[in-house]
Image (cartoon, rainbow, N blue to C red; front, side, top):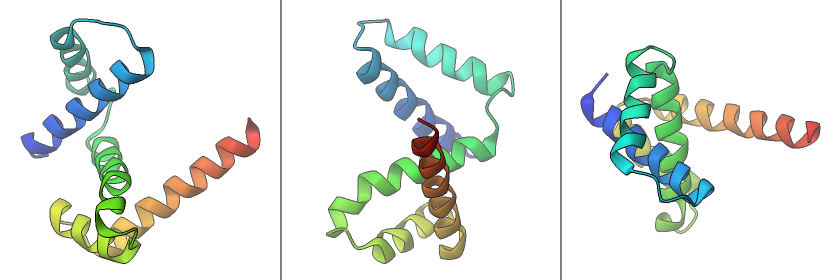
Length: 104
Protein backbone atom coordinates (compact mmCIF):
# COMPACT_ATOMS: atom_id res chain seq x y z
CA UNK A 1 0.00 0.00 0.00
CA UNK A 2 1.21 3.48 -0.81
CA UNK A 3 2.07 5.83 2.04
CA UNK A 4 -0.09 8.43 0.26
CA UNK A 5 -3.15 6.17 0.66
CA UNK A 6 -2.46 5.71 4.36
CA UNK A 7 -2.01 9.45 4.92
CA UNK A 8 -5.24 10.23 3.04
CA UNK A 9 -7.10 7.66 5.15
CA UNK A 10 -5.64 9.01 8.40
CA UNK A 11 -6.56 12.62 7.59
CA UNK A 12 -10.11 11.73 6.58
CA UNK A 13 -10.73 9.60 9.69
CA UNK A 14 -9.32 12.25 12.03
CA UNK A 15 -11.40 14.97 10.33
CA UNK A 16 -14.55 12.84 10.56
CA UNK A 17 -13.83 11.95 14.19
CA UNK A 18 -13.30 15.60 15.13
CA UNK A 19 -16.48 16.74 13.37
CA UNK A 20 -18.69 14.00 14.80
CA UNK A 21 -17.52 14.22 18.38
CA UNK A 22 -16.94 17.98 18.42
CA UNK A 23 -14.34 17.65 21.14
CA UNK A 24 -11.09 19.54 21.05
CA UNK A 25 -8.79 16.56 21.37
CA UNK A 26 -5.13 16.56 20.51
CA UNK A 27 -4.97 15.89 16.75
CA UNK A 28 -1.56 14.19 16.88
CA UNK A 29 -3.00 11.77 19.46
CA UNK A 30 -5.88 11.00 17.07
CA UNK A 31 -3.42 10.38 14.26
CA UNK A 32 -1.41 8.12 16.51
CA UNK A 33 -4.52 6.11 17.34
CA UNK A 34 -5.40 5.62 13.69
CA UNK A 35 -1.81 4.68 12.84
CA UNK A 36 -1.83 2.20 15.72
CA UNK A 37 -4.99 0.57 14.34
CA UNK A 38 -3.37 0.27 10.92
CA UNK A 39 -0.05 -1.02 12.30
CA UNK A 40 -1.86 -3.56 14.47
CA UNK A 41 -3.62 -4.82 11.31
CA UNK A 42 -7.02 -4.01 12.83
CA UNK A 43 -7.77 -2.02 9.68
CA UNK A 44 -6.83 -3.77 6.45
CA UNK A 45 -5.36 -2.15 3.37
CA UNK A 46 -8.52 -3.08 1.49
CA UNK A 47 -10.69 -1.30 4.03
CA UNK A 48 -8.50 1.79 3.85
CA UNK A 49 -8.68 1.87 0.08
CA UNK A 50 -12.46 1.32 0.02
CA UNK A 51 -12.93 4.11 2.58
CA UNK A 52 -10.73 6.47 0.54
CA UNK A 53 -12.61 5.68 -2.68
CA UNK A 54 -16.07 6.10 -1.13
CA UNK A 55 -15.13 9.35 0.63
CA UNK A 56 -13.46 10.73 -2.47
CA UNK A 57 -16.52 9.88 -4.55
CA UNK A 58 -18.81 11.88 -2.26
CA UNK A 59 -16.31 14.74 -2.20
CA UNK A 60 -15.70 14.80 -5.96
CA UNK A 61 -19.25 14.26 -7.22
CA UNK A 62 -20.41 17.90 -6.73
CA UNK A 63 -17.18 19.16 -8.34
CA UNK A 64 -18.16 17.30 -11.53
CA UNK A 65 -21.77 18.51 -11.68
CA UNK A 66 -23.01 15.24 -10.15
CA UNK A 67 -21.90 13.20 -13.19
CA UNK A 68 -21.30 9.79 -11.63
CA UNK A 69 -19.53 8.29 -14.65
CA UNK A 70 -17.10 11.19 -14.93
CA UNK A 71 -16.39 11.02 -11.19
CA UNK A 72 -15.86 7.24 -11.37
CA UNK A 73 -13.43 7.68 -14.27
CA UNK A 74 -11.39 10.25 -12.32
CA UNK A 75 -11.28 8.03 -9.24
CA UNK A 76 -10.25 5.02 -11.31
CA UNK A 77 -7.22 6.98 -12.52
CA UNK A 78 -6.44 8.36 -9.08
CA UNK A 79 -6.62 5.01 -7.29
CA UNK A 80 -5.22 2.96 -10.19
CA UNK A 81 -8.30 0.74 -10.40
CA UNK A 82 -10.59 -0.08 -13.28
CA UNK A 83 -13.82 1.85 -13.59
CA UNK A 84 -15.67 -1.43 -13.01
CA UNK A 85 -13.86 -1.91 -9.68
CA UNK A 86 -14.80 1.60 -8.55
CA UNK A 87 -18.44 1.05 -9.58
CA UNK A 88 -18.52 -2.22 -7.63
CA UNK A 89 -17.13 -0.54 -4.51
CA UNK A 90 -19.77 2.18 -4.76
CA UNK A 91 -22.56 -0.38 -5.34
CA UNK A 92 -21.52 -2.40 -2.30
CA UNK A 93 -21.48 0.78 -0.21
CA UNK A 94 -25.00 1.67 -1.39
CA UNK A 95 -26.20 -1.85 -0.59
CA UNK A 96 -24.59 -1.71 2.87
CA UNK A 97 -26.22 1.67 3.59
CA UNK A 98 -29.65 0.43 2.49
CA UNK A 99 -29.38 -2.61 4.78
CA UNK A 100 -28.28 -0.41 7.67
CA UNK A 101 -31.18 2.01 7.08
CA UNK A 102 -33.65 -0.89 6.95
CA UNK A 103 -32.42 -2.26 10.28
CA UNK A 104 -32.49 1.13 12.01
